[in-house]
Length: 329
View (cartoon, rainbow, N blue to C red):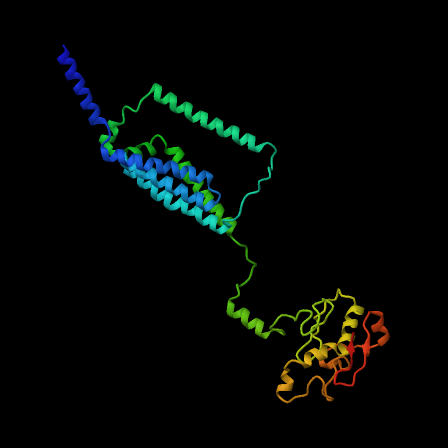
């Protein structure tokens, strides 16, 4: 009797050893499982969105390798190729385009949303734990050897996908197609009716226009960057349109009178002038045309400087005997 019991115990131990996973599978499990858990924890506690995505890639790679170790090669390769190679790379591209330093606002849009989110999360965890516990207590994983032996893992997955889960599969494909079409519609830019102009046509139109360069800004070749300071052309005349029409005329005339008094002329005469370089008349030469007196020179017709008006604006005109007409203090 004891010999029979001993023989039965040895047979059961041999069957358990045969059913237990091999040494290589155990080594793979004890290496990949902690790495998968480490990747999940790193994804949760990483501050950067890119780092969280990379930690999730580590977890997915470990799960794919575990699927392969269990004999589900198709599921393992699908995990690596589809999730890790496609979806996660799409997440990384979106993060790079939107800015990896961008962060969501910590202000609650809805009052109490954090508490509600925590309660929903705890409810989902409880639901999953309850389902797993009931499944392990009431039913096992029996009955998988026969279909796997007849069709293999890929055939069994295909049969279940296109028989029992055909409607969810087609619904998921329609949802993906709708999302792709919606993305294309949102990214589409409506163009005005008419022929689309090429770069060459736009260049020719700009060359035929009156002005090839933008208007000079206020304060060019001047001693002030004020919006009331007119821009000066290389010959010393005021550039038309350099002062906005919103500026009061009295303010612009005050700046121009200060220019005529010699402050701006003295600053320009110290620099190299193209008209001086080729032997032409300079700014202080007798034959120079005053742009303020000759409207055809591109300037604006203004009255001579009035010392009384300059004193009202805080500018005192001092006559000098040099080439410039005076200085202001």
